[in-house]
Length: 66
Image (tube, rainbow, N blue to C red; front, side):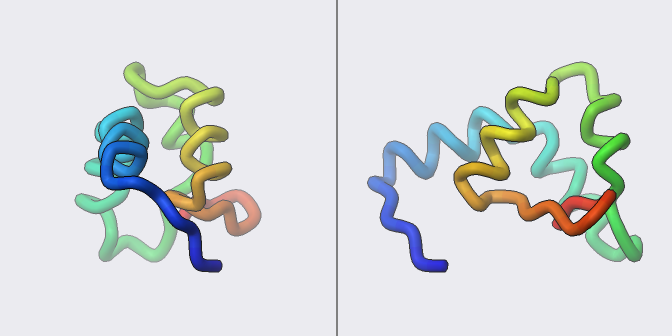
């Protein structure tokens, strides 16, 4: 899906989820990143995870995030 962001919106969205995105990137060679792992991060709560999902920065796939 093609989404149009201004550069400021994109940077703010990425900045808001930078800890989770960095963690997922570090573990990118693992088969999957579980939703529970994201919730356990102290910097991220479920609202910020849902925000990143709503902006299509991360994608839920069952019990996993991509």
